[in-house]
Every structure is written in structure tokens, then in C-alpha cells.
Image 1: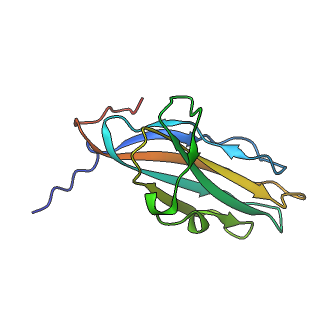
Image 2: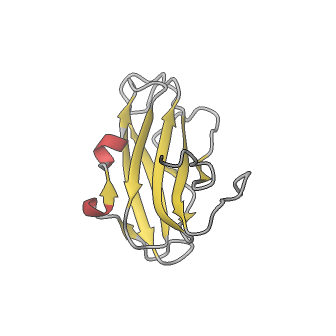
Length: 144
């Protein structure tokens, strides 16, 4: 029988903390995630009730070797599981989740959500990075 334990094999890091409604087109840049000690990472976005009626949200992923991501570059499509298009969303995608995985070889990664057309309402977006396949288990609880 397969092990049903994922609790001790996953680690969660705040990606985009929840904040008060965003009311403009300022890019939402995530925390920089250090993948050291893990073999996989998945970015998960959660939307709230978005009151703008024409906003769209594009997603990009950056990678690099420096902890501050100086000299970073956009992740190539073949280094992602899923697509940035599928990870994006519109004003109509209330209370939904989106995900995109990274399989590249760089240690540090981050995600950016760029609104467009957010001119008449409030948007709510939060996210978490799920690090998996820990090289050393169990992972910390609570996550740090």
C-alpha cells in the first residue's frame, strides 16, 4: 500500500501574503523562494472576489542563482509544468486556485502577477509556494 503521508514531505512558504484589496495595475511580486533541500516546487495562487469588470492577470516566473535574484531571467516554458497562461486569470475567476510548477535547475525562484485593466474595482490575490520531495524529512511543523 502506498504511504498516505504527505504532511512530512511538503513544506509551505508564503508566496503572496493576503493584503487589503489592490486597486491598480501595480505588479504583485512574490517572495523569493529558496528551493534548497527540495526536489520540486509548485506555486499556488488563490483569488478572492474581484470587483473589477475588465481586469486580467498575467503570470511570469523568474529564476536565478543569487538570493536576491540579481541577474535573474524569465523561466523558459520547458522548465515549467503547466503554462503561465493557465496560471493567469481574469476578473471572472472569483474564489479560484491556479498553479504552476517549476522544474528548472536554479536555486531561487519567484512569481509575478501583473494586473491589466484594474481600473474600477478591487482585486484579491494570495499565494503559497509548495516545496516537495524534501531531501530530509520530516519537514518542519509549523513551516518556518
